[in-house]
Amino acid sequence: MFANRSMPESVVIPELAYRDVAEAVAWLCSAFGFKERLRIGDHRAQLSLGTGSVIVTRQEPTGVRVETPALERRSPRQPAPSHSIMVRIEDVNGHHRHALQHGARIVRPPADHPFGERQYTAEDPGGHVWTFSQTLADVDPATWGGTQADRPAP
Image (tube, rainbow, N blue to C red; front, side, top):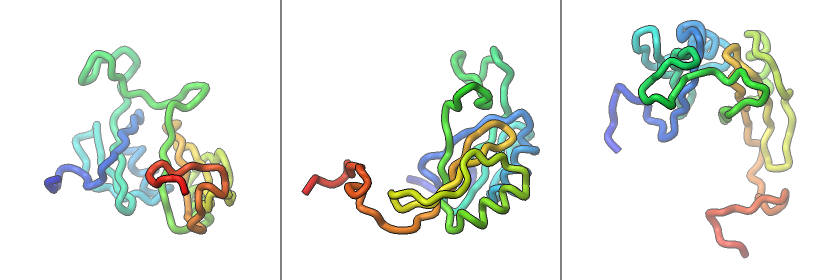
């Protein structure tokens, strides 16, 4: 794959819609530790965290056609979220404290899980749900009921 300074290097890049791109960028950077990488007018920005990236886009009102007639960029203010984003970090407890100080709504507090991760989940002001995950141990998926698809069974 060719490098392009106009595009993040991440292979998978979520695009998240917010009413105010500048406000969302400021909040995501201060609360969750993202770094702004590129701004495109007032309608789009690229953010990075470690080797991962997200793109913040301007939310379009319902019914406004964008790019294709079926594509509307709306934040997920619905009874059940349509998606969430998982981010691997080094220190869940410290990140959780920092996010709380910056007004994140905590959906699930930090907890250890049998699959070797410590995680917490927060909702940002745009209604997007984020789970932050810290690896505690390398755990064989078979020990907690998982099946690893990329390896043949013993």
